[in-house]
Length: 192
Figure 1: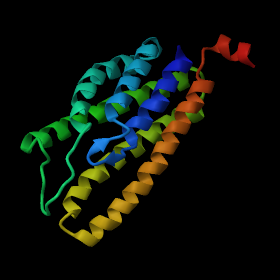
Figure 2 (figure 1 turned 45 degrees about the vertical axis):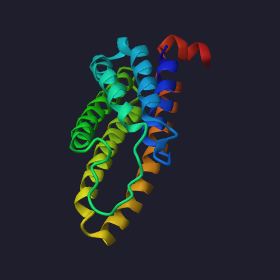
Figure 3 (figure 1 turned 90 degrees about the horizontal axis):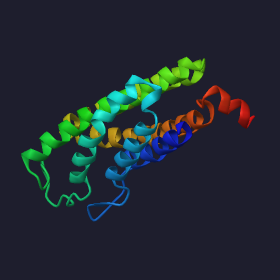
C-alpha cells in the first residue's frame, strides 16, 4: 500500500507540475494528477493525520482542475481574464490556495512518516521540498506584478521555468526515495 501510494504521488506531481498545451488543450492535464494524488493519499491515510487532512482537499482540486483542461490561447495584448472572465480569477485563487494546502499536508505527512522510521534525511528533504514548492508558487504570483515591466517579466519567466523543472525532478526523486525507504519495518527486511 505504501509503495503504491508514493508511486501515485510520483506520477500525480508530474501531471500537476508539468504543463504542456497545444492550441489551449492541456496534454498533461492536472485533473489526472489530482486523481492520482487522491488515490495515493487514500493509500496512506493510516500513516499520518496529515494525509487525512490532505484527503479533504483532493476532491475540490479534482473539480477545480476541470477548468484548466482547456484554456483558449490569448490573441490580444493586455490583461486577459480568460474565457471565464473575472470568475476565472476567483477559481485560480481558490485553486492556488487548495493546492498549497494539499501539498503542505502531503509533504508534512511524508516528514512525519520519515521521522517515525528514523529517516531524518527524508524528513528534512520533505520539509525542504514543501518550502521550495511554496516559494515557487509565490514567485508565480509576483510574476503577475512584473508583467508591467516586460524585460523583468521575461527574465522571471525563464527563471521560473528552470526552477519549476528542477523542483519537479526533485519532488519526483523524493517520491521514488519514499517508495523505496518508507516501507514498514518488516517489509524492508524481507526485501533486503
